[in-house]
Amino acid sequence: MPGWAFFELLMLWAAIAYTIANFRRVSKPAAYLLLPYIAWVTFAGYLNFVIWQMN
Image: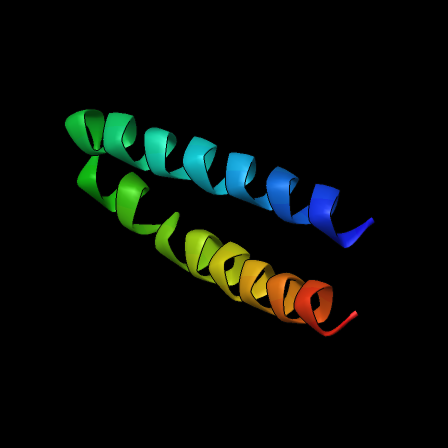
């Protein structure tokens, strides 16, 4: 069910973005350490979307 997986990745992406925004108020280095994580989730979302569209 790639469509459902893509939706879950979007929710995860939003949660990470929210966490980064809140961490930035407390500690900028902590927020910056989450950037590779959101980049990875973005890449995984792209791959998932392409596979979903090809099937």
